[in-house]
Length: 274
Image 1: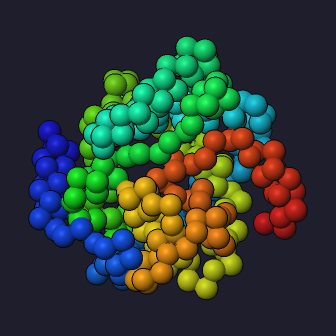
Image 2: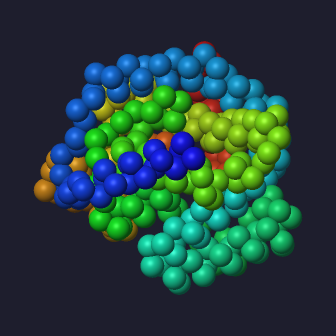
Protein backbone atom coordinates (compact mmCIF):
# COMPACT_ATOMS: atom_id res chain seq x y z
CA UNK A 1 0.00 0.00 0.00
CA UNK A 2 2.86 2.38 0.83
CA UNK A 3 4.45 1.82 -2.59
CA UNK A 4 1.13 2.38 -4.31
CA UNK A 5 0.63 5.71 -2.50
CA UNK A 6 4.14 6.82 -3.44
CA UNK A 7 3.46 5.78 -7.03
CA UNK A 8 0.21 7.75 -7.19
CA UNK A 9 1.96 10.83 -5.77
CA UNK A 10 4.72 10.62 -8.35
CA UNK A 11 2.35 9.98 -11.24
CA UNK A 12 0.07 12.89 -10.38
CA UNK A 13 3.08 15.16 -9.82
CA UNK A 14 4.57 14.23 -13.16
CA UNK A 15 1.28 14.59 -15.00
CA UNK A 16 1.36 18.28 -14.12
CA UNK A 17 4.84 18.76 -15.59
CA UNK A 18 5.40 19.76 -19.17
CA UNK A 19 7.15 17.14 -21.26
CA UNK A 20 10.72 18.17 -22.10
CA UNK A 21 11.51 18.72 -25.79
CA UNK A 22 13.50 15.79 -27.18
CA UNK A 23 16.66 17.91 -27.39
CA UNK A 24 15.93 19.97 -24.28
CA UNK A 25 18.58 20.48 -21.60
CA UNK A 26 18.91 17.96 -18.79
CA UNK A 27 17.28 19.17 -15.58
CA UNK A 28 19.66 18.17 -12.80
CA UNK A 29 18.85 20.43 -9.81
CA UNK A 30 20.19 17.86 -7.32
CA UNK A 31 23.58 17.41 -8.99
CA UNK A 32 25.63 17.70 -5.81
CA UNK A 33 23.59 15.01 -4.07
CA UNK A 34 23.45 12.92 -7.23
CA UNK A 35 27.24 12.99 -7.50
CA UNK A 36 27.59 11.78 -3.91
CA UNK A 37 25.19 8.92 -4.59
CA UNK A 38 27.07 8.10 -7.79
CA UNK A 39 30.34 7.89 -5.84
CA UNK A 40 28.66 5.67 -3.27
CA UNK A 41 27.29 3.37 -5.97
CA UNK A 42 30.68 3.21 -7.67
CA UNK A 43 32.50 2.42 -4.43
CA UNK A 44 29.99 -0.30 -3.56
CA UNK A 45 30.24 -1.76 -7.04
CA UNK A 46 34.05 -1.83 -6.97
CA UNK A 47 34.14 -3.35 -3.49
CA UNK A 48 31.38 -5.96 -3.81
CA UNK A 49 29.45 -6.37 -7.02
CA UNK A 50 32.25 -6.18 -9.57
CA UNK A 51 34.45 -8.81 -7.84
CA UNK A 52 31.44 -11.11 -7.45
CA UNK A 53 30.53 -10.64 -11.11
CA UNK A 54 34.10 -11.43 -12.20
CA UNK A 55 34.07 -14.61 -10.11
CA UNK A 56 30.70 -15.50 -11.60
CA UNK A 57 32.04 -15.07 -15.13
CA UNK A 58 35.11 -17.13 -14.26
CA UNK A 59 33.33 -20.00 -12.51
CA UNK A 60 30.09 -20.36 -14.44
CA UNK A 61 30.42 -21.93 -17.92
CA UNK A 62 29.32 -19.68 -20.77
CA UNK A 63 26.38 -21.84 -21.78
CA UNK A 64 24.99 -21.80 -18.23
CA UNK A 65 25.55 -18.06 -17.93
CA UNK A 66 23.78 -17.56 -21.22
CA UNK A 67 20.88 -19.73 -20.05
CA UNK A 68 20.53 -17.72 -16.85
CA UNK A 69 20.55 -14.50 -18.84
CA UNK A 70 17.93 -15.87 -21.21
CA UNK A 71 15.75 -16.91 -18.27
CA UNK A 72 15.67 -13.42 -16.75
CA UNK A 73 15.30 -11.83 -20.17
CA UNK A 74 12.24 -13.97 -20.78
CA UNK A 75 10.72 -12.82 -17.49
CA UNK A 76 11.35 -9.20 -18.45
CA UNK A 77 9.49 -9.77 -21.72
CA UNK A 78 6.25 -10.07 -19.72
CA UNK A 79 6.75 -6.47 -18.59
CA UNK A 80 7.56 -5.49 -22.17
CA UNK A 81 4.35 -7.13 -23.40
CA UNK A 82 2.24 -5.22 -20.86
CA UNK A 83 3.82 -1.91 -21.82
CA UNK A 84 3.39 -2.65 -25.53
CA UNK A 85 -0.35 -2.79 -24.93
CA UNK A 86 -0.38 0.31 -22.74
CA UNK A 87 1.45 2.23 -25.47
CA UNK A 88 -0.89 0.99 -28.19
CA UNK A 89 1.79 -1.08 -29.94
CA UNK A 90 -0.49 -4.01 -30.57
CA UNK A 91 1.50 -5.66 -33.37
CA UNK A 92 4.64 -5.49 -31.25
CA UNK A 93 2.63 -6.83 -28.30
CA UNK A 94 1.60 -9.83 -30.39
CA UNK A 95 5.24 -10.46 -31.28
CA UNK A 96 6.47 -10.07 -27.70
CA UNK A 97 3.64 -12.17 -26.30
CA UNK A 98 4.46 -14.88 -28.81
CA UNK A 99 8.12 -14.61 -27.85
CA UNK A 100 7.28 -15.24 -24.18
CA UNK A 101 5.16 -18.26 -25.03
CA UNK A 102 7.71 -19.78 -27.41
CA UNK A 103 10.67 -19.22 -25.10
CA UNK A 104 8.76 -20.44 -22.04
CA UNK A 105 7.51 -23.69 -23.54
CA UNK A 106 9.93 -24.52 -26.36
CA UNK A 107 12.86 -22.83 -24.62
CA UNK A 108 12.54 -24.81 -21.38
CA UNK A 109 11.27 -22.03 -19.17
CA UNK A 110 13.22 -19.39 -21.06
CA UNK A 111 16.66 -20.95 -20.68
CA UNK A 112 16.97 -21.03 -24.48
CA UNK A 113 16.12 -18.15 -26.78
CA UNK A 114 14.01 -19.87 -29.40
CA UNK A 115 12.09 -16.72 -30.35
CA UNK A 116 14.90 -14.71 -31.93
CA UNK A 117 15.79 -17.30 -34.61
CA UNK A 118 12.07 -17.46 -35.41
CA UNK A 119 12.00 -13.73 -36.11
CA UNK A 120 10.45 -12.68 -32.78
CA UNK A 121 12.74 -9.75 -32.06
CA UNK A 122 13.64 -8.71 -28.52
CA UNK A 123 12.13 -5.32 -27.61
CA UNK A 124 12.58 -3.06 -24.61
CA UNK A 125 9.63 -1.20 -23.11
CA UNK A 126 8.98 -0.17 -19.53
CA UNK A 127 6.56 1.90 -17.48
CA UNK A 128 8.83 4.94 -17.50
CA UNK A 129 8.60 4.99 -21.29
CA UNK A 130 4.86 4.37 -21.14
CA UNK A 131 4.32 7.35 -18.85
CA UNK A 132 6.31 9.43 -21.33
CA UNK A 133 4.14 8.23 -24.22
CA UNK A 134 1.13 9.28 -22.17
CA UNK A 135 2.54 12.82 -22.00
CA UNK A 136 4.00 12.92 -18.49
CA UNK A 137 7.07 15.09 -18.00
CA UNK A 138 10.33 13.35 -17.21
CA UNK A 139 11.00 15.50 -14.15
CA UNK A 140 14.42 16.05 -12.55
CA UNK A 141 17.29 13.67 -13.15
CA UNK A 142 18.07 11.57 -10.10
CA UNK A 143 20.80 9.11 -9.21
CA UNK A 144 19.21 6.35 -7.17
CA UNK A 145 21.20 4.50 -4.49
CA UNK A 146 22.04 1.01 -5.81
CA UNK A 147 19.79 1.38 -8.89
CA UNK A 148 21.73 4.11 -10.66
CA UNK A 149 20.60 6.77 -13.17
CA UNK A 150 16.92 7.65 -13.45
CA UNK A 151 14.48 10.54 -13.45
CA UNK A 152 11.21 11.06 -11.60
CA UNK A 153 9.14 9.54 -14.40
CA UNK A 154 11.35 6.47 -14.69
CA UNK A 155 11.35 6.14 -10.90
CA UNK A 156 7.55 6.11 -10.91
CA UNK A 157 7.83 3.43 -13.59
CA UNK A 158 10.10 1.34 -11.37
CA UNK A 159 7.61 1.49 -8.52
CA UNK A 160 4.77 0.59 -10.89
CA UNK A 161 6.65 -2.46 -12.11
CA UNK A 162 7.52 -3.52 -8.57
CA UNK A 163 3.85 -3.68 -7.57
CA UNK A 164 2.47 -5.07 -10.84
CA UNK A 165 4.60 -7.09 -13.28
CA UNK A 166 7.77 -7.83 -11.28
CA UNK A 167 8.06 -11.62 -10.90
CA UNK A 168 9.60 -11.27 -7.43
CA UNK A 169 6.36 -9.92 -5.98
CA UNK A 170 4.84 -13.38 -6.41
CA UNK A 171 7.59 -15.07 -4.38
CA UNK A 172 6.48 -15.22 -0.76
CA UNK A 173 9.54 -16.86 0.79
CA UNK A 174 12.08 -14.15 1.64
CA UNK A 175 15.15 -16.35 1.19
CA UNK A 176 13.98 -17.54 -2.22
CA UNK A 177 13.09 -14.01 -3.30
CA UNK A 178 16.47 -12.65 -2.19
CA UNK A 179 18.35 -15.44 -3.98
CA UNK A 180 16.32 -14.82 -7.12
CA UNK A 181 17.07 -11.08 -7.08
CA UNK A 182 20.76 -11.59 -6.26
CA UNK A 183 21.23 -13.99 -9.17
CA UNK A 184 19.57 -11.54 -11.54
CA UNK A 185 21.76 -8.66 -10.32
CA UNK A 186 25.02 -10.63 -10.57
CA UNK A 187 24.07 -11.95 -14.00
CA UNK A 188 23.40 -8.44 -15.25
CA UNK A 189 26.56 -7.00 -13.73
CA UNK A 190 28.65 -9.76 -15.31
CA UNK A 191 27.48 -8.60 -18.72
CA UNK A 192 28.70 -5.06 -18.01
CA UNK A 193 32.29 -5.81 -17.05
CA UNK A 194 33.76 -4.55 -20.31
CA UNK A 195 31.46 -1.55 -20.61
CA UNK A 196 33.00 -0.18 -17.42
CA UNK A 197 36.27 0.43 -19.25
CA UNK A 198 34.71 3.43 -21.00
CA UNK A 199 33.81 5.04 -17.66
CA UNK A 200 37.27 4.38 -16.24
CA UNK A 201 38.77 6.56 -18.98
CA UNK A 202 36.17 9.34 -18.86
CA UNK A 203 37.10 12.83 -17.63
CA UNK A 204 33.78 13.07 -15.76
CA UNK A 205 32.09 9.66 -15.47
CA UNK A 206 29.04 11.16 -13.75
CA UNK A 207 28.27 13.47 -16.67
CA UNK A 208 28.94 10.71 -19.18
CA UNK A 209 26.49 8.34 -17.48
CA UNK A 210 23.90 11.07 -16.95
CA UNK A 211 23.95 12.40 -20.50
CA UNK A 212 23.98 8.97 -22.06
CA UNK A 213 21.14 7.67 -19.88
CA UNK A 214 18.91 10.68 -20.60
CA UNK A 215 19.72 10.41 -24.31
CA UNK A 216 18.74 6.77 -24.43
CA UNK A 217 15.64 7.25 -22.28
CA UNK A 218 14.29 10.02 -24.51
CA UNK A 219 15.10 8.15 -27.67
CA UNK A 220 13.41 4.96 -26.44
CA UNK A 221 10.34 6.87 -25.26
CA UNK A 222 9.96 8.58 -28.65
CA UNK A 223 10.96 5.50 -30.69
CA UNK A 224 13.34 7.82 -32.50
CA UNK A 225 15.49 6.62 -35.39
CA UNK A 226 17.91 9.48 -34.73
CA UNK A 227 20.37 9.88 -31.88
CA UNK A 228 18.93 12.60 -29.66
CA UNK A 229 21.51 15.02 -28.25
CA UNK A 230 20.21 16.68 -25.04
CA UNK A 231 20.74 20.44 -25.01
CA UNK A 232 21.38 20.56 -28.75
CA UNK A 233 19.29 21.11 -31.86
CA UNK A 234 21.23 18.36 -33.58
CA UNK A 235 20.31 14.73 -34.08
CA UNK A 236 22.69 12.05 -35.27
CA UNK A 237 22.18 8.69 -36.96
CA UNK A 238 21.99 5.96 -34.34
CA UNK A 239 24.81 3.95 -35.86
CA UNK A 240 27.21 6.91 -35.64
CA UNK A 241 27.39 6.86 -31.85
CA UNK A 242 30.96 6.56 -30.61
CA UNK A 243 29.83 5.24 -27.22
CA UNK A 244 28.36 1.94 -28.35
CA UNK A 245 30.14 0.17 -25.52
CA UNK A 246 27.92 2.13 -23.12
CA UNK A 247 24.73 0.75 -24.65
CA UNK A 248 24.87 -2.07 -22.15
CA UNK A 249 24.80 0.41 -19.27
CA UNK A 250 21.30 1.51 -20.28
CA UNK A 251 18.62 -0.12 -18.13
CA UNK A 252 16.04 0.67 -20.80
CA UNK A 253 17.74 -2.02 -22.92
CA UNK A 254 17.44 -4.39 -19.97
CA UNK A 255 20.98 -5.41 -20.95
CA UNK A 256 21.48 -7.09 -24.31
CA UNK A 257 21.27 -10.85 -24.75
CA UNK A 258 24.35 -12.89 -23.90
CA UNK A 259 25.02 -13.69 -27.55
CA UNK A 260 28.17 -11.55 -27.25
CA UNK A 261 29.72 -13.48 -24.36
CA UNK A 262 32.41 -15.18 -26.41
CA UNK A 263 33.50 -11.87 -27.91
CA UNK A 264 33.55 -10.23 -24.48
CA UNK A 265 35.60 -13.05 -23.08
CA UNK A 266 38.23 -12.44 -25.75
CA UNK A 267 38.29 -8.76 -24.86
CA UNK A 268 38.75 -9.52 -21.18
CA UNK A 269 41.80 -11.62 -21.95
CA UNK A 270 43.48 -8.43 -23.15
CA UNK A 271 42.61 -6.42 -20.05
CA UNK A 272 45.33 -5.49 -17.59
CA UNK A 273 44.81 -7.49 -14.39
CA UNK A 274 43.74 -5.42 -11.39
